[in-house]
Length: 487
View 1 (spheres, rainbow, N blue to C red):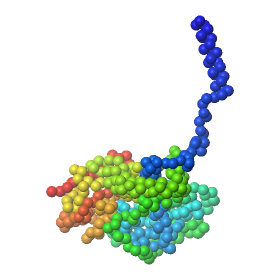
View 2 (view 1 turned 180 degrees about the horizontal axis):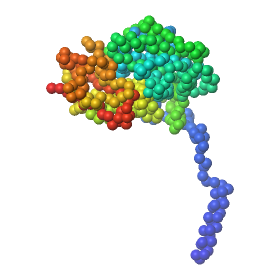
View 3 (view 1 turned 60 degrees about the vertical axis):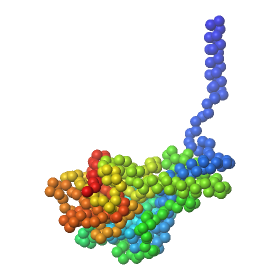
């Protein structure tokens, strides 16, 4: 009996093995995403599901809609100019430069700094490559932050990389042309959308303001067709003001309008290719967009989700505790800045709170809304920030401490002072070698006024920039100082 059963089992496994060979039960694995079944458009999607996917799309796509809308607005300028007399604007393919610190009334972008002379230009690289001119900045710190549609930086161009003066070619993802002689290097963008924000360090002295003017005139971009191997120049000190002045009380320009978001989101899906692993995400969003085209109710639900998400998720990113990671003493520091990849949390948070960071090896950012006791910073109180001897931010470039109001913009004050740091040549150190800054609405007194950072009457935040950080900045071992309320 046992032998009989063993024989049957042996026969069964033999037949099964043969059958599996001839009639496999296993479905072959898909070799790529296109071989997988895709979401169907022939469905009726309930409100709850529509809003769930719409919220995901809004959070994920917010930075890119923001970026495209900025390009559309800035490039309407007919020539290099200052929008509202504040912000450099230029036609597509060109840039415009400031010749001094940015004015405190600007609302183009939150958390600007007054350590550098800024430039700004946007590009449409499917129309052709762009030449980027780099003059000789001597020993001055400088970087050209070049971003793609995702707000990731796509180039290492600046003093930290020992970049040489000359000409660089910025090309789009499909360009296959010939690089002409005289080009120092080629910068490849993964998206047709790109923009550049040069940052050129300037000390807060009349002498340095004069010295920076010559290289600023040679900071230019133009189509490859205009390249002749000769350094061009443009006198930005004479560019006109166009457009109305902004209202600083309204906060940053509203670059993303919730109930218009999905009118612009299709452009993102078309022009920004998915990163590895994002294909399924794109498929869900495209399904939703297709349903909205034929069903007005679906689109209405999507708009409602966008409006609600803007008031909750996006609004929460304005609090510094929801940006980056803890840095000690109730400060946070940026994480993956301008190298976000699939870090959607930090990318959207940065786009809302302080758009256009530099990469970590160029700049590390530290920010707080609170003092050492976790109380909200407010101009009704007086504070001190003391760097112990040798404990100012360890950098090869420069550092600063900046104050922003509750809209992450500057608040005009009697000193026209919004930051303190390397640029200030007259800071007073304490007898033990430490450095104390005084943060208050009223003057701390004539003997302390060189180290005074004026605060508005209401809530405010503090923000440290460390350009070209040393190892303690890069590895996170340096901690920002305590913000202490004074009695």
